[in-house]
Length: 306
Ligand SMILES: NC(=O)c1ccc[n+]([C@@H]2O[C@H](COP(=O)([O-])OP(=O)(O)OC[C@H]3O[C@@H](n4cnc5c(N)ncnc54)[C@H](O)[C@@H]3O)[C@@H](O)[C@H]2O)c1
Image 1 (cartoon, rainbow, N blue to C red):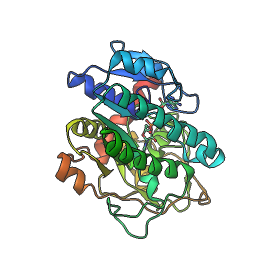
Image 2 (cartoon, protein in one colour):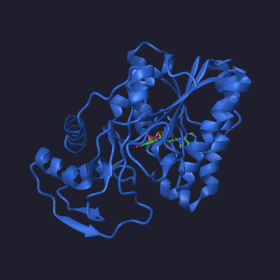
Image 3 (cartoon, rainbow, N blue to C red):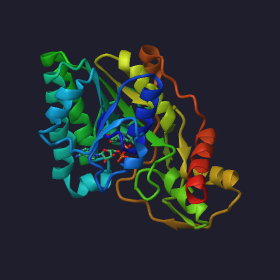
Image 4 (spheres, protein in one colour):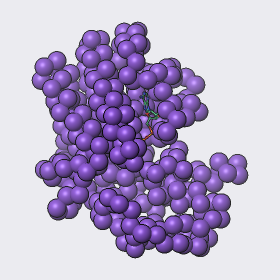
């Protein structure tokens, strides 16, 4: 498991352990990412290493994974725009290092964290697997390119894959200081009894999917979804204003709101139709936004005042 100390990766590790699998985590705990050593349970072998490091070959040779879950990435759209070279280095060159070593040790399959960002701003919603990918950031570009490499390695090296193109994932352990999730950022501020900033008119929507549903999807992908790329979301659009209102309801605190301009490049909507993931892998999200936000709120609340 690469990126297993990160927000999403660590939930997948928990789910794999619960299913009785042996797990090894490679993660560099990159300073600009959400990875924390404390996210990885003690009984899991943790290797602090960069996926671009050639010596991951030794780790692969010793552990001999049957399946490689590749979740390590430069995961910030903003950083990718500032430094496309770094983004490509980690997300493409790093991926190739992982794939080469997976082939060398005879791994059966790679499960890849794709992204809805590879679609850019589509002309029609909901987004399905048939929607053209026209990424509008270097991050979206490398997530798309990665899937072409996965196809190549399947055809040329018989290394199977499933790519899961996530919508906006939220839940416990998400970095409240990161750019990633409005839910984590808002919860952090609500708990400190601070105000929140709403950009644009707050009517912009995203498809928020709970991290534990994502972890279950990664279990389904262990044995299903061969050679496929799936869009992974709930099919429900939720606006920033609705998120704000739900948090007022959950916390009982009416955080003061300041308004700001639309951020450049911000998309108006996102919505993913995951029918194919249901048909081919039996996956369906189970957690309502309200329940997922409540669990996330309780998690962060305990961190602040245990
Ligand atoms: N959070 C979302 O909404 C979302 C949506 C779509 C796709 N994804 C993808 O899911 C994956 C996990 O994202 P996340 O939100 O958990 O982010 P995260 O930053 O919490 O996790 C990424 C992990 O990768 C590690 N990492 C970064 N560069 C590395 C390197 N060079 N070598 C080894 N490890 C490295 C980081 O230390 C971190 O632990 C990423 O591939 C991301 O692109 C996330």
